[in-house]
Image (cartoon, rainbow, N blue to C red; front, side):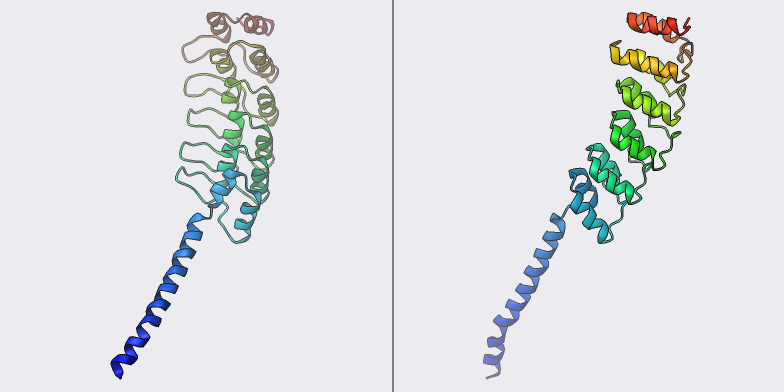
Length: 228
């Protein structure tokens, strides 16, 4: 009788264990499938970001690249997510593994709307990228006219020299193509107080570099501003 009783209970016991195990596996799978705050931010999922924050997610959590949710949103130019995170207090100067911050990246890439938000929420204008330059220098190099003006107006030092020995003015000449947008950038830098005779690390003046590149438009702009 005893053996019969035990045997009759075994299936129920195992079914209970199996049921609990399946519930645990299902719960774990669901958790693993749910995007992290960084992933939700990069995907532009405002609702998921808001829900995660409401549930106590760390607004400064990091992924494998040391990106915060705001950094990931900035990389993907997810403006509304960036706005939400910044309004919630996300650090606009938090650095990732390659020394970028939301402010520096937005400036370098001409992400104007996010850049303005970072400037309005404590962006460190003196912070430097991994090349030892301000946000203004890569903005000038990449031809982001509006961004260059925004950074000048914000007070970024126009004559700051990076590790290559280049200012924003020189970078616009050396790495630019001499087109109208680069002419506009050089003009705006000059109007913002850039020294037209400040040489690079090898002693080459902006005018000399423009001549070497055959940039007639730049040569005229520089000479008009007193370049030698």
